[in-house]
Picture 1 (cartoon, one colour):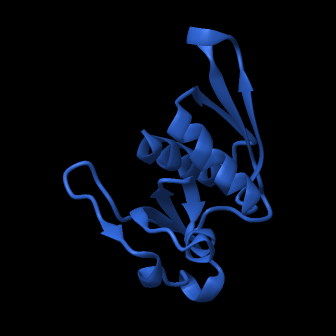
Picture 2 (tube, one colour; picture 1 turned 90 degrees about the vertical axis):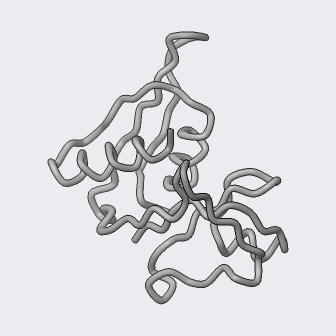
Length: 123
């Protein structure tokens, strides 16, 4: 699940690792790509075939993940409309939302006028 991926990335950056390998899951890959587009990760690659796929993540030392707030959990999911998506840390952070159009940032979801499940905030 994406929660494990986020904790692995945060711990790897804190330990000074340059890259990280983890198993391939569609939602994990979508979250990692979104973090790459936002500048928190340098490069995200899928390696292997069918059942043995892995995601290789290269860290970005210029912009490490400082903090992480998990908003939805399997026991308590939070859904909001696009009007309720606010900026994180004055625009420095990133809100990640699962919408019918895929995994988007809060800003993209507001622009597309689509609500969904708030997954996490990262700064």
